[in-house]
Length: 401
Ligand code: NDP
Image (cartoon, rainbow, N blue to C red; front, side, top):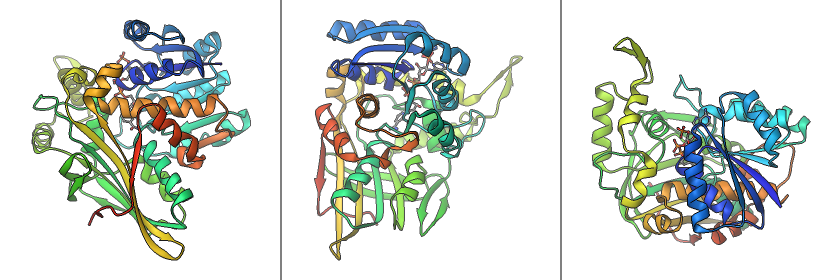
């Protein structure tokens, strides 16, 4: 019997809202609050058309303004806020939760708008404030980060005495028919993939040039794909929370057309976040590019194919070497049929709802700021299967060189 507030009404928020409303026993009420209220109203109408027992309200809010948001939280009285706006709003939404006395959940770590650099430092600095307030902040409850980190906690709990190596593999074999489009917010996506890569090895970060390290992997149900090493936020927390880890890497698949377009856009300056003057007005080239690219939410009806995201673990069990692969395969067209969205938003929105459910039901408790792998993975793993992201395992996976 809980009320939840979702901030944002984009691709991921849309899926999470549908999933909240499929879970009416836990979430009796939902408030969808975002910058553009008409998008919240459209989402509410879509959910109600499909049928739900959850009572839905909508509101307009600027989540960059902590006072404005705290005032709305006090009026709506949710038990927690699920932040599915953009990483730029993380800190103001955490401030508003502290001011109004509610729990906080997100899927992406804070990134200052004027610096393409994301790290947990800013949000970990809130630990003491959440502890003192007796509130929980759950960070990174999407797929990666999110499910990948829960997979690591599950592997550690059930399959290993020591994990030495983790390779996180994110493959999208979806085809939307456009020469170039991104599957989630284009600005955030392009900032991520055009940055330098890095991985954690023997207690230190090793930095690479963007897309410098390429591997080919034969993914279950998807086949052979080119994948490239990226920096990714869960590497930072897993390096601390998986004791004895020697190396963690993150790879994402990209097709040649995507990379060629990206290189061209970079070469002409369109991916820059440094403002320029255009006809007397200051504009950020990457934000202008976002405005001309297809809206990720519009890819749903066009995308065919599957995603495969998971982790390969290597380590020691009972004195013997062991390898273990945990992954989920998700079909774009099935997601669209169920909630009107493609698989990237789906694989993020489902775990966002599950993380919120873990706090709302008191399954996970604790005062402070936590990364998701710090909690018991078992109830989350059960909920993944129940809410549409069943996982599979292999005890003899191909390893990444
Ligand atoms: P979208 O751009 O589709 O949606 C973002 C929403 O936030 C929009 O509705 C937008 O409003 C709203 N918003 C933006 N700024 C504000 C503000 N100041 N106040 C109120 N609302 C605001 O993004 P996605 O749905 O693709 O992504 C959502 C989040 O999920 C991002 O943080 C992204 O990084 C994360 N993500 C995490 C993944 C994971 O696996 N962990 C994978 C994919 C995404 P408006 O409609 O007016 O623009």
